[in-house]
Image (cartoon, rainbow, N blue to C red):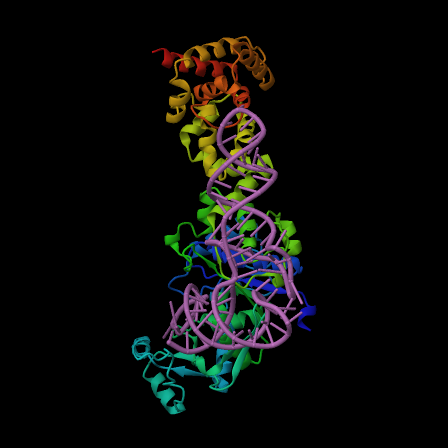
Length: 492
RNA sequence: GGCCCCAUGGUCUAGCGGUUAGGACACCACUCUUUCAAGGUGGUAACCCGGGUUCGAUUCCCGGUGGGGUCACCA
């Protein structure tokens, strides 16, 4: 009985580009299903398109999966009992299956050229007929076949599709989906260059790799009857299918480059954490069933099930991803955030130089990031958020300057702040605040009257961590120097 | 165009015959606060339409409409 065995699933991308966000979600669902069921997650590279497949893409996809934390039990690099895991290295398997089909007559050679086929398709389209193969070579006699071959004509192998009856896809998320066989034409299983087509190769591989469940995007649903037919022709049992809803762009169309970031790589570059992307993607088409959204991966693994996968296509929403990302930036281990922020800080050599010069070293950087991380939503915002702790020659934010510094009493106020802070010897958060409060009391004003101008004077901004945190982080010397700078500028 | 899938606020979703239709993002107030975030409170906002079935349909069935997918020597 199939479902008593361990489940085996695979993610089978074609290496023609980066790891797409949709591909990542498909990989994630497969991975979650495998982990939840204690099954195996296989990575298989479908590189039968010689034109478009590249090794860079293979590397990029694997890097993307690893970055997301989706490890595979079998596949490139790690190997496995059912390899090789590149389709281009499994040609003998396709060849064997194909000749078995050709032998029995379940498949036949077709000598039509791509040009002829394209012309017929075009004509059919113009006449409003469904564009399907017309069976031109379906009934060639052995003599005709031999003659064509002798003439050196290139040919493909087509499956002889039954023209009556129906084929039903048993889908774990959609139920039974039935197709009339007449709507399916004699599709190609082996291209004229000897390479298998997708609908053929994946059936052969899934069989040999003992894949039990095929989880993939809904766009493959209409391909599935073809794959079932191939399996039937070969006398094989098909795996169980589950077609998960697609991810659409905000304008409801299929996701493409013109919709901004679509690859995992790009999201990484924009400062999103893998934890956040995983959490967000898991929620796109799946829900735990209760009012929970932020979930650690282990929890998702524990609760994931195909029964709770949605049937509706989902539009991805960067705003919500951003919200989740902000959550993880706040909640994750500080060292983790430090490490994740590093590449972004390194992206600004000027800032890096200042950080290196800082005697406070990594401890101070850690404290600063701890102070600002509650306020950023992406890692990309961190360099700017920490910059004024290191850079003395910052400009005053226009609005803040006008509102708090360009006021008559500002100069005198800052002078008083300067004097009071000068008396603080141990420049801690508590001590600076105490000094501040006593000045506030002495002047009989509201706290903000002193705090706002001071903040602009020492940070250049109207927002950020608590003022006393900032001062403590900055230290007495820098705090006073910055106050002096502001006083100086106002005095002139 | 044929075939297939889908349909709860702008978005992600819960719901599996009887609910004041729940949550989250976003948005708007208020609150907290030294600012900004975060947090808290409240608010605007949804069952595509029409027929059935049923005592009763968001929920089941059919039709329509809408959206998506697919019809390649791409996967």
